[in-house]
Image (cartoon, rainbow, N blue to C red; front, side):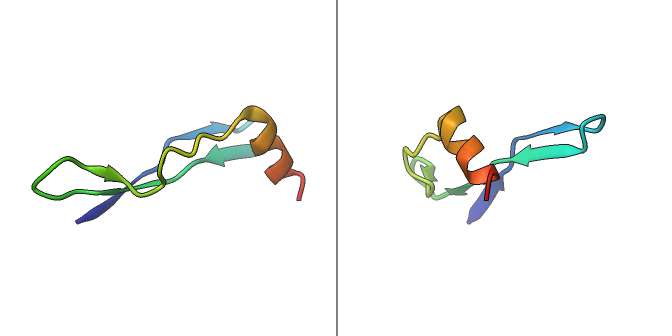
Length: 51
């Protein structure tokens, strides 16, 4: 089974929302984060939002 973890931050007063998704593979063994060990820095997120 695959589940999605979607932590988010929403600021209604500013009219913005940020949500990151991680897909998690759940098996009889340990769960596996399909996103891998990729961590986004603040700078990377800001750069993506400029597009």
